[in-house]
Every structure is written in structure tokens, then in C-alpha cells.
Image (cartoon, rainbow, N blue to C red):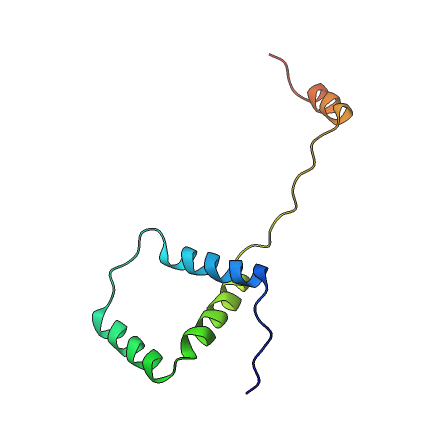
Length: 89
């Protein structure tokens, strides 16, 4: 199978970020039997870690909300209008 071009910097950072998010924070205890099965499968098929990581990243991207564009700062005119709509006690 021909190899794909090397990963870009953005792909490299996306993989590292995904792994950090997946392994960081509070985690449930590891099921040792499941861990042994997974490690044995990965040992028999070294490409599995790559393929499963890419699959997990694709699935996670479908469930994560799309990034919101950065809000532009309000102009002085917009702030003036907003101030007119606020109730002054």
C-alpha cells in the first residue's frame, strides 16, 4: 500500500490535541481484561492504533459543535444604540 504524504503541521497538532483531550482529566478506572485484549489486538495489527485514532477523531468531529466565528468588537455606534435599550433604574 502506498504511503500518504507526511502529515501537515495542522494534522500533527490535531492528533496531539485529540489524544490529550481523550486521555486528560478525570477518567473511569481501566478494565484490565479489556485493556489486555486491546493491547494484544494492537500488537498483532500495528496499524490499528492509527486507524482507530483517525476513526475516533472523525466521529468526535461529527459530535462536536462547529467552532463559532470570533465576535467582532462593537462599534461606538452599536454601543450607543445598546445603551439606549437598557433600562436605567
